Image 1 (cartoon, rainbow, N blue to C red):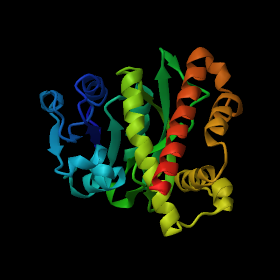
Image 2: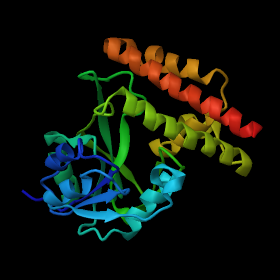
Image 3: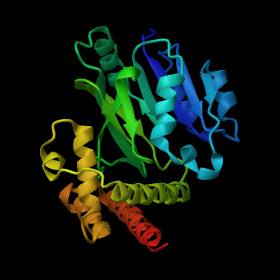
Image 4: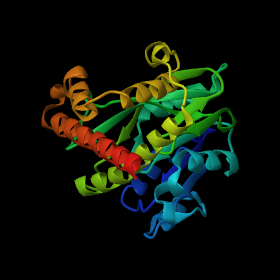
Length: 281
């Protein structure tokens, strides 16, 4: 049964993962694949599933998303002609569970005053759900596009203009589907953008509130201030490992939890090194 929800999927050379994602959203008759000039068969696969493909012309010399992921997403939600007032945003390595489909069905039929909804995401690694070590399980993914905007160069936060609710069910995420090497390559790129964002925040004297980092009711705004607080702490890579492995009880996820915590600490260390390099250049 078709649901009155448009689907937005961001892609860049996703011929391996895209079919599984598209299979999980067959209930929509308005699927949009927003492609960053893939050089594989991503576009052909999308069209074979009946999806509409939008390729955006940005300066590819600046790297992923033209060097600004928030701007890339903002362009999509402002310019792609969605059929329905509600949009579900996914990445190609994500899948919608049947429980979430039913939750979305009930929500769009009676959204009340909400303009967006958070959905819990389950990350999988080595065939194991990272139930404990995962840093941020809730993401704002179902929204009215005119009521949402994105900020930050990479891993952007969603800023809703109105009340936000929570949905029952999961988005299943497979970030290591292409292997550790791909994950490392991508996070090497991400760490550059994160470092650049930190430098820009310092130059602009971006406002930061330690009170909002702990007590802000909106999750995404709270997460922004928590990130800014975290960037000000010494020994961040070590703290990141301890937070995930001990604080969030990542040890309960066994070997996958330990490896994931180490990888996240390494990612944090890359950011630290690149910020130092940029400040000295």
